[in-house]
Length: 489
Image (cartoon, rainbow, N blue to C red):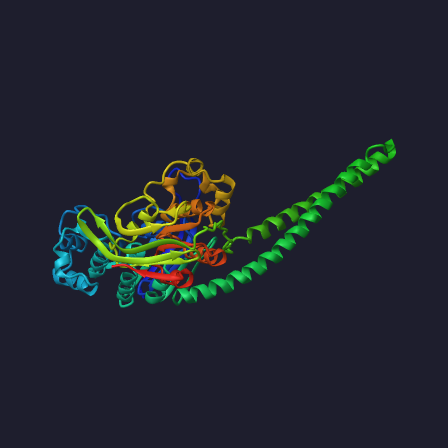
């Protein structure tokens, strides 16, 4: 058994006033196919970078094999895909690297193309093939599903299920269920390793959370009782002190001595009560609270909001996808599906008036109020208060939504560029949740979003039934929330 070990690992980014890890300790068998689960901003990517040796932390880290972090940095994207792939596994024979590529559906024609012309999903599969061609490595895989369509996710999950040992960050529940044998979860104040897939972890998480909630309720009652006792002690001390005022000279000495003794006992009792309160408050740490989100959907007077007949996605003279036909009516929750690069995002942008790539017979109801969540977060930077002001959203509501999605108050003072990718996506979602709209248009809203917030969004959609059209590749999410699927490509 080769063990991956962390002993009392602590880490904070330079210039940051909050600690990512404090005395983190665990050990795991490198033969396990292990999923790494945790809230956005909890330090999953940071942990991978520490294990890979990219970040230096206090404490002891031991990885018996050579840790290799996915995705790889790309140096020369103009090279052929095959040349780039071989550069990721320079010590392996070409036949082994090529065989891994074939097993992920990458053929000779694709490998001969310039790497830069590959779709993001194809690049993901190529990098994974190179990673697992290396016999000396312990793969550290950071969110491989974000650029994979449904078919790509199924293919990669099946591929990983046949591999030997890795640590994988993913928030796609169906994907994790198909390829992992163990979970490593970064909780609020602890780390837990458990045998089984995501569903096994979720069952244990709910059981543990219920037990923690019951324990916390009891602790809160004990704290409240202790605080009441502390207030009574303080009131009693004040009364004793007042008895010294107005007493005669003879009484004052006796009362003063007695009061001093009683005050000493009172202070000792109050100090013990304060210690008991602090001890109990220190135990209120590890429960993951998944808050309830709210939405303000509006109704449009027309029943049919969008009708597309025989349309095509075109970029100049190039036709990407044609024969696109669908309708969206009030109350529908439509999911656009299809392979990477088939024009799904272009359809959404055209509906929002941000593109004219979708051409043909397209009818959109007049004066339709739309709330749009774009796929990319690259434009997000600056102070949070400035971002909120630009959106014209209510600041109190906006920050309450973020708090409900597990944003700590300390995050509000950070520059947005220092947020994790999941936290940035939550900003875009929070803006949309602040908007009153007749149609919500969400482009891959779950990219980088943790599993807890995915469940929150599922519950929100089922509770408020907004009219929604979205592109998303999380199978579990789509099965719960969509009422209609449109296949492109």
